Length: 294
Image 1: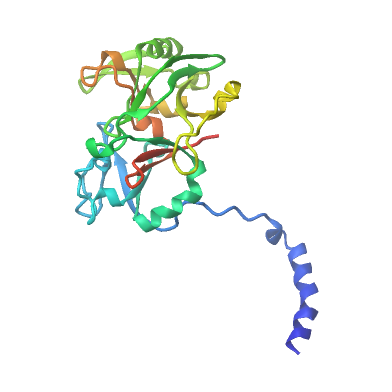
Image 2 (image 1 turned 60 degrees about the horizontal axis):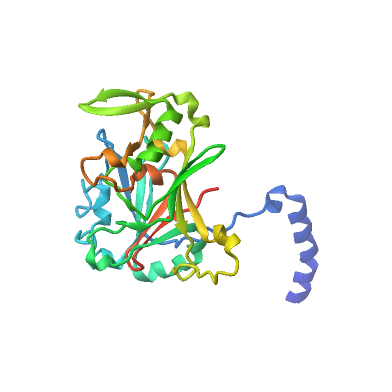
């Protein structure tokens, strides 16, 4: 009897699905990121620092770079047991988030591995900061053409908004953006024309591609012309390295690495480099992942 009812109603169900446009729409693919995790909001302050506000006591008023410090005690088991997903929106008036995953939750990140450009950190146990001296192949600046130079490493530094680039790249960037220097709260700031973002160049960081397990891909040397296929590009666009202020002005979030008093000559990826993309602090895997962008 039940079988007869099912077969009798099946054509009606099929017809209903065919006629109802809402049922014909393709459903979006599920987000491959782990579904569970502890989410803590982060907010940009007047000094261009992201901090945890209205959060549990262990986080409250802590700066965002706290998450990169191996000595920080922001979880019961210590940071080495966590994978952290940081999201800083392009709109600076909106709050960002830091999402924490346990080891068991982190295992499911393998499903999302190809969504990220992974940079492996060697000898993390000898360094207190996750994201220090991440390996690079080179750095460039690109619009219609590309100007590039070799580079060995870059440091992710969430304590600052600024991207520090070598002088050769910096000189080209200054020329391309026609900056205007002014003082702001005792600091020298660089401003650009907000209406010219579409003609500004991209900053490009070359990264050796890693396989699914996290190791660098091997090249047998037979196809040297395909070497470019073994390189990922971490691209920072003008809308990321240019910040529009509350006053409606546009600020250049880049600096000359060779003229910095601290860490002179070190290429740095400040939080401007990860605006509008997810970045993964993988303590368990001793690596940092940058979401790929179209």
